[in-house]
Image (cartoon, rainbow over all chains, first blue to last red; front, side, top):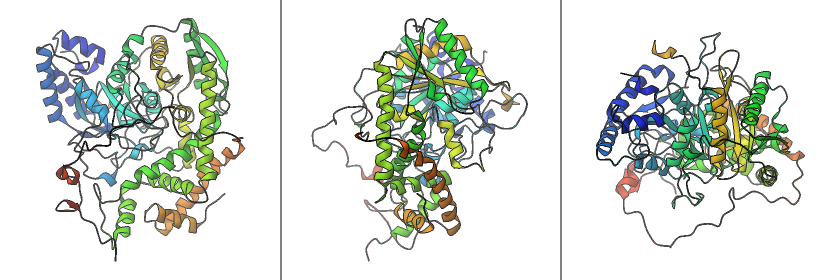
Length: 493
Length: 95
């Protein structure tokens, strides 16, 4: 029997309709693959019984001709999404034992369309991190390895579990979230496709909040077509999320293959940073050449406030996080450490429940919002944010359809390589991605090449608000030129 | 602008996180590193610039002020570390 886990979502759709295999057989194949890949630590919790029940229901619906857009498709769900009755802890000890009595809107949409849940995927604690090394459940290992060494590499973060699982064929696709790059950076580190849609495209209801003005859910998938298929199911306006926008959800898959003829692609000079590795510069030039060959017009542009996005983000995001994480106090859910009085209980619970990176960000956030500092830091950062967004608005008003940049300043680095580095060094992994969250725009990462060591590298495309279709068009052009690559399955031996 | 140990203790109290002396020292160093990094925002001329309060320009969605949810104490208390009847139980709050 062909390895069913090798099929993309589009191929699963065809195969199930043609009755080449059943949803149960497909789910079983994935459950077996997951069992053999535990060394990667991509899943925090596997849900085999539930997966098989859902697959059985999918088979019944297929038999009755009532199949949905994602019928029978086995997916992994980032631990940040509330899944009814199933472990949902944002990879944190502070939410110990939490099983929500409700379902997030995004995952409810996926189950509405017939998808199957394989389990909850590992991530950086509370989505704070760029390497999946801050999880209470231990780090995730990148399924990719360098040609010259067996040393374990990070998959990127915070959606490291999602990216690893997709790259290692432990799910057909995965949900993820992106606040400063947490979909796009791990996608780039693992040779997968990840899209963060426009702020407001997907409902944030039922997603554990990190920074409410930056968070956005999106898919990580094996190719551009699969990402488009998943986003269509995930996106919806939601009465329970007032920041979700009532814009129709197009059939994003139609955009794949429509090409970029006559479109204008902007190349921002400020994204060429000091000390950028030659391989990344070459990747960027390759992307430019491919889009040009496909009929796009390449335009040099300037986004003058680019360098201020990262420092502004490291004020805004921790500030919002300090507010969002105030609820974890041991009263209503999760860990409770007994105290002499209620404040003692709060302080001990939060001290024991939160990891180092989370505490660091809560502290910075609390400081910049505190009396006497609010104007100097938070207010100023919010003004810089307006300028960052304005840079993009002006460029788009000038007729630019999409912007092409590198996705990351390097390929995947070694596990623990940054253990002794200053926090800023880790934050610099997001230098190309945070601008997009700050401006609320959609951004996609697509695999575009490999380092001399064989590691995947990705390019990023940034689009106009609610023009994810343009991103799928352009990403598909890059994908067609660059080809697909998959890691050698060393974990199965 | 740099923070001293007193400030770290004050911020930890505001954040309701118990911090040991050793941790406080490490956090002081980290906070100073991060604040040093964000100093560069002072280079930007923000005269006349409004702070961004809405990511996507839209009017706040309103709904009818009626009760549409609730009456499910079981579900609300399902994850409680300590519950008593239909209440969350906590250590004494007021002396």
